[in-house]
Image 1 (cartoon, rainbow, N blue to C red):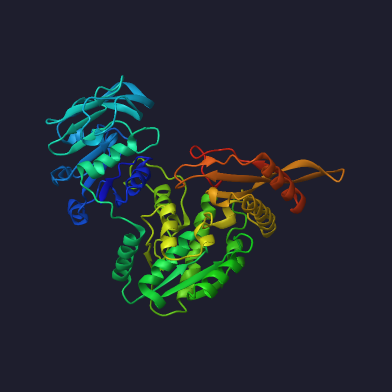
Image 2 (image 1 turned 135 degrees about the vertical axis):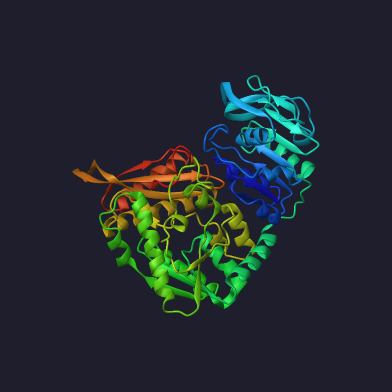
Length: 509
C-alpha cells in the first residue's frame, strides 16, 4: 500500500490511478491525518502531492512532520517537494521565472526513481516556486534550463522529490519513475486485484453493518449495481434495494432494472413511484446546484420513508466513487474549489437518520467495471455509460417540465440507438443529448418554425477526471441530427458539443 497525502493538486486522483495500474493499492488522505492513523495503515511508502499553495504562504496546508520519522520512503511532487524540503531544513523561495508546460529534464544520477531512464527526457512543469537550498543530506539529481533542482534525493533515507509531475502523460518516463519508486525504492508487491479488494470490502462491510439491514438506492447504473452485488455478498438478505422512479430517467430504464435485478439476479427489490414529488419540487427551478440539492434531498426522503415501513434499517448504501468526492469537496479545506456537488456526497441532509455505507468510494470507474466482471454481472450492465444521479434534470438547461422531459427522452433514445448501431457505445465514456433553453428559427414543410435546440455530447475518457470530445463520423452525426429533427416533435436544430474537460465539464450542469 502507498499513502498519498493530499495537498490539493488537481492530479491527486491521477497519482492514485498510476499506482493502481501497477496492482499496488493506494489511498488518499488529507494532510491532517493523525500519525497514529498512518501507522495503523502501515503503508510501504508516502507520496506528498502537489497543490496550488506556496509553503511560505499563511494558511498553506501542512502535515505532521513525524511522517519523516516513520522509516519509510517518501516522494514529494511539486508542492510536496517544497513541503518536504522546508520541513527538513531546506529553503524554498519564489522563482525568478515560473515554469509551466513541457521542459527537458537532465538527469545527473540515474539511480533510485531515475533508474534505467535516459537523459535528457521530457517532463511536465507547473510551478512558480523553487528550492534555493536543499535540506541537509540531499543532493540534486535532475535539472532543467530554468530549475537547478528539478529533482533531489536523500538516498540513505529514501527521500525523493521532483518539481515536475510524473503522473501526467506529458512526462514521457513518468510511469517508469513511479514504478521505480514503488518497486525499487519501496519494495511493493503486485498483489492488489479486484478479488483482493472484494475480500477486504466484504470484511469491512460486515464489521461496519453487523446484523443491521441496509437499503440501497438502485438506479441500474454500473456504480449502484456493483455496490448492490458487493453488499449482497457481504450481508445477503439484509440488503434491500430500492428503485426510485423519479420521472427523470431515460427511455426504458425502469423496465430494464426490473428485468435485470428482480428477475435475473434475484435481489430483494422494492419500487417507489415518486415522479410527481420530484417534478413538483423542481417546478420553476433553473439553477443547476439547486436542482442537484433538491434531487439529493428528495432521494433521501424517499429512502427514509420506505425504510420507515421496514424494521432494523440502519444504513443507506451508495455507489459513491473517488471522482464524485474529489469534484464535490476539498480534501483538506484549503484552496481546492467545489466544481459541482454530486447527489451522493453533496445533497445529503445534515440530520439524516441512516448511516452511510459506501464500499466503492476508493475506486475509479474502470476499476468498478472490473469488479463487476469479477462478480459476474451481465456485460451490458457493466459497460453501461455513466448516468448522473439527478438524471435528465441536469441535461435540461433551465426549467424541468414533463413536456421538456418527453422531448429530451426521445432525442436521447435516438442518439443512443445510433451510437450502438455504429459500434461506438463501449468506446465512448458518455454520449447523451441536452435540451437547451433556447429556440431557433427553422423551415419545415415550407412553414416557419420556432422550436427547441438539442445539443449532442459525446466524450472519451478513462476516469472522468479529464475527457476529450469524441470525433464522431460526420455521416453518423448527420444521421443522428436528421432522425431527431424528424422524429422528435418540437425540435428543429441539433448542435454538437466540441468542448473538452477541462475547461468544460462532461455534463452541462
